Image (cartoon, rainbow, N blue to C red; front, top):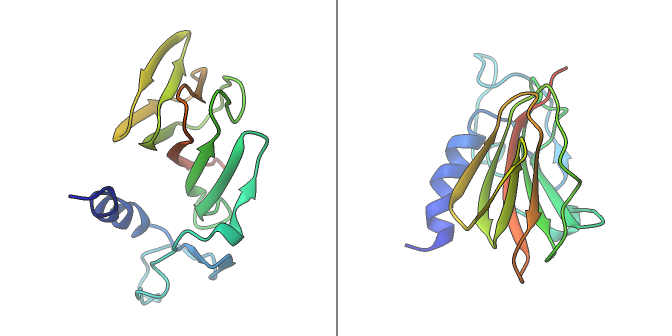
Amino acid sequence: MSLKRTLSPLLFLILIGFQPKINGFAFNPVPVPTDSITLSIENCVNSFNLGNIDSTKAGYQYWFVAKDFLDGRTLKLSCINPGLASHPPHQHDEDEFFFVIEGEAEFFLNGARRVVGPMTSLYCPPNSEHGIRNAGTSQLKYLVIKKYNK
């Protein structure tokens, strides 16, 4: 089974609770699901588009679900170049999940470190010091799933 086929059901299940942007344009930020919204294939699909990436010092990110939607729930793709990190280990009130798609990630959690590969989830409890760094020789790609406090 290809990686694309493996991730499609996972992304569908994650995204069904969100109202994503399509080609960079956001739909009205309303809670989903509601009785007044009809979900359709058009507003439940957000395909990756290089034209809509946000460049960073370490690589780039792509927001499948931006933090201004719904109640702060987000889904983001982070792509980090070899040897780099998006930022140093840090902490915040919200918990956060990472899901490694490609490459090798060095995960930091409260002073401990572990290098992991593709198809691995990483959980960051609230107020824990955490971070992720590309420990490999190719680009690291991982999903970030987080609910921002309003």
